[in-house]
Image (cartoon, rainbow, N blue to C red; front, side, top):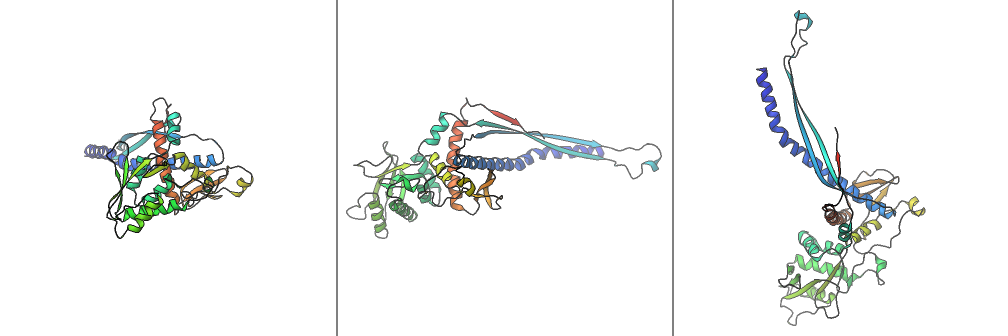
Length: 353
């Protein structure tokens, strides 16, 4: 009977260790990688604000080796029963599961990484992001730095005239018309133009908004005021004869610069001249805040310790969280492109018990 019980015990344990190790381990590894990626990015942003260098490591692989061990024992007494009566365990058994992960890192470096980081975000990527979000105008503001003659600079001092209110109004109208179902961004079947903006079924309810939308872009309303409108969209800077929308975008590095400028520098560090100075942020970064505190923050979605202070993003600051998430997603694309290069050295670290 003891042997049968042990056999069943071992069989049951073996059948459950595989599924359980996946269900319990996968979420833990995923969360750990996500948190360390967030921390690595925020620390690099803070260090760059202090004018210091930093390096990045990408997690390219996690191999979790699971060991399964069983044990069984039987206590038997010899001699007079009064010596061992009540102190023996007739049968004992146990299962031990041991997990030893091996994590593989790749240093992020090289021309491919730098090129991806500094290149403007493609129009295709901008369209994909806007199509997937509930409020596409927010991402248009974050990514586009110019639409025709309407400028959206990273910093307000970058434009002699300051913030261009026309850009913000154009973005508001875009979102309003999109949510009303009269404006759509569609692919163009021709080879020289990738996308078109289609405006239809707008008269008479939305005629005034469509007219204002076109006026801001320097375009004319149809003569009859009701026919369908097709506006070609180019990834370019507007030329003198251009009839459509010419959009230019920020690079991932530009987004990181806006994040660096949004850091709340401790007064003692500012007075000591330890950090780089930035002009006031433009429309995209005016509501972005990376806070600092002497004590560890209690409500932080991301926090890193540096130079005796904690730098963090408050968990209730949705605008900063959205901006940070977008910057991290785009930065991850640059990191992935560099990590995929076979020439990059690999650092593999086995994690002991």
